[in-house]
Length: 474
Image (tube, rainbow, N blue to C red; front, side, top):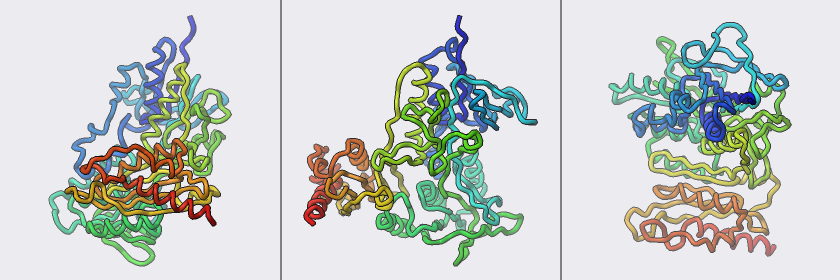
């Protein structure tokens, strides 16, 4: 009787547990032993939901958990919590493991270098780490990140401690990306006076500056003080060492609470030490099957990898749970004896701050230039519904198209209710390598409660088509 192979997974969230679960569906315990190692105390949770938990839209932490450790174990996965991998040995097909000796399914203890654990297949799903600059006071009580469930719980406890003080509470959010603007909304809803600081020209650097300006203007209109081109230099502390203000080069902003939303970087320190291939952003490089390049039995997925951008043809790091779960499905299918590939992404993302919806897909102007592409841009203003229908709200759509060919390169949308998810039409068009002229013939749904006669995306496509023709005439 053949001995079961062993699959070891590092990381117990989206990519890792998706890979483990899919492999288990295809192969039973007699064929494949699956061991998942998670250094934290939670598995399969939505980190993207933490701002909505903080803001009160999500009632409890359990609502963010898709599958508990117990549920994974019931499905035949040896899940070990509070267990950290400290070293990879790809040539020896083993990892060094420390911790897990607390009754959570692990083995060993927290002292010493740890024990070696062998594998036939290793899945690296170590995620990403939040940026936390080494500034004075950055680790003071009252400064919070929002990357993990433990981060979220700590933040909720801090918010609840001050719940009785309904007025005068001040919060500073450092960083105006997705997490920053979402946390600004959460804090406004909690009754804080909120200041958002960002060193960029405009908030949301996932948009071009002209579209980011629309976001800033809307945030200011909501009562959120939004300061751009403001590099934070220190976190000031007061009585008991708690945070009292955030300093920039030009000013100081009072704060009872500080939230960091400075973005993330791939968590690939172990991979780097093991000599595995990394890209420009530090993410692991894989083939289409999500196998680490040059390594037959090493796989990687989620926020620790770089993936192919189908528009620019370059590798990019994009930390999104949608991608991570797909990576895991591909990895689990391949380890389980099937065949699957992950072809790449077009860079689609959507977010909101209060009632403002923000979306993008494809390339920004700077990214198109960096890829050596010539392009035209158009921006249109339309409405989410027929202009005469109650509730019609303005939206701006910006579109990039390749010079002469007219190939769609990117779309950005900023607007009110009904704006954000329109980006999905553009994402499909990008995936199909459509031209903007081809897009003008798309048969999209129409009724006055849902759209003007010409959907805003199609209005932008028509204008982009005309711009491409004018560019080709010169």
